[in-house]
Length: 487
Image (cartoon, rainbow, N blue to C red):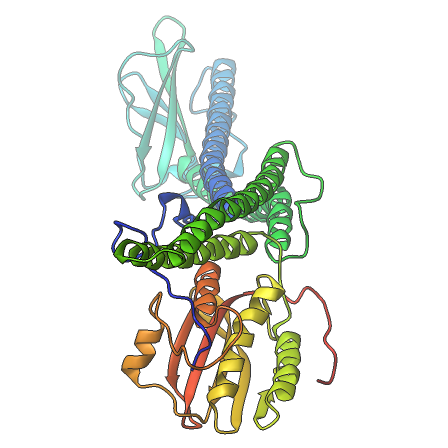
């Protein structure tokens, strides 16, 4: 089924020539989005800061209300003290507080005037059914005693007591209390409202943080798209203006591209020099061996033939590797296959080639146009040679977890291959058929190019009865180019 494939042999002392993978070729691992990291970091900090702010505001509000209550109670104590000193009699009707809260039972606002012995002389209307505790212990710098207790109805109250002496023998204790539970309820309500407001502020700040993170990452996205355009063949260098934090990265990428081009050019020159340097001595040895007779001449001639074959093979490999290593090439597989089918119809007029043209969404081949022509041309030519008059060509995109591949299917109604033969012809250095004439290096070159591009080649049984060849190659984007409407 092939034309003249070149015999390939492994390098001396290496057994089978197996492809090796350098540690530098290991794919980079993705560890998440920078924008997402910035968002979650800022969001976490916002949550902690807003929660702390909520508790701080609640504590400040609680302190302010408690201080206000204490000042109110001190005012009422001073009022009763002034009235008592003015009248001299705790039972006088003038000794009273006008605040209506002291008239409402179970309000938590109470006042009373006791004697030093604990006898109750006067009290507020709200104090019916309860008794304020007798304060014990030392007085503070203002001459008062304070305490927080629960009344008979379970209301938390703050109590302030002050001792007043009238004359040498009359000592009274003035006790005033305020409802502390009201303050605690106000603080709880304030805390709930504060956290609702701070939560709303946090949501707005989180949205703003996400917008800022996305805006800050735009230059990185632009750089990524610029590098992708280079890889897809739309540009030869990374272009654009970037912030000073990532501008050196763009410059290094461009420098790497320039260095890669220089290395490839030097490799091509060295390959050419090596070809000229080796072929001439080998040709001289081969000619001398032909003109001589004897066992030694036969051995020299046989070995120089092998050396010539190996040199040609590995030089061709180097040439292909250098040609396909250039970043930024792509080709329209549809147009190439249309061109090849037209050519093959002229070369093989007795063969009917059915080409199912794909739609415009088919991705392009990421590589050199000449390489795709060489691969697909060899496979299509082989199919035409071995078919019984019918060949089919189909193009499609094959999507998987590893990405999208360009799938070229070429099948015929020829004799085909057994599974064992199909596996055998895909090994390196195996000749398929030396009797059938052909052009180029045949299937071996196809396999070399497929390996260089990281694609795959599979031989299967065709629905037409012959051989089905499946060629998978890397893809590039269309890049906004249009195709002709007809073949």
